[in-house]
Length: 115
Image (tube, rainbow, N blue to C red; front, top):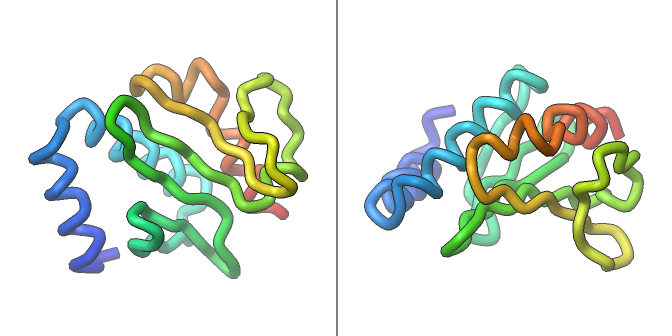
């Protein structure tokens, strides 16, 4: 987990926007709480998380953080929070740290990892 590219990305986020960094850090912690064996790497300008295969990505934008699922079309959207109309990909938009709980994000991470 000591990837210098991950460290640099987090450092850059800290300089750009502490609020966005807080959402990214809380999302990372939640991912590792659900999948302790996960690894992360910088890809597509964000953080990709994988185990046997990639299961989600965390991407910081100006006003939100997006938690992306490459096979989001296969997730049960029990909280009704998945966005996106592509063939496979879906995402959850996180505007604040509290959205992680409010949008039941842990169960989506668990489902994505299980696919």
